[in-house]
Length: 110
Image (cartoon, rainbow, N blue to C red):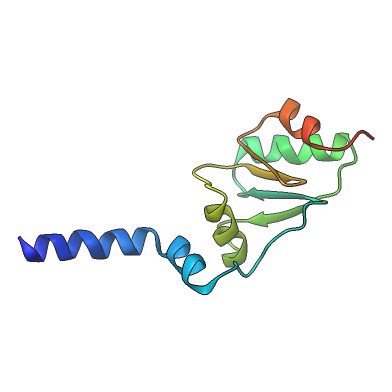
């Protein structure tokens, strides 16, 4: 029984290492400012592509992190509660999934 509990505990630590590491080390390594747009996406995601097209259509400047290629981007994506893509940080408002109305509402009037 003790071995089972130890294995479950180790698995839990492994699954939540990014959150534990951020908690222990203080502030995370990367914190986007509250005055910009950051897209956490993947290359193959159709809704990520739709989000890119929305940004282009409305001339919205943004920074993109491919969470499969960027460790820094992946850590921030996980810290923001990412479980799927896209995740958008629009001026401090976190939007999970493709939602043009929410994205545009989070941005200042243009």
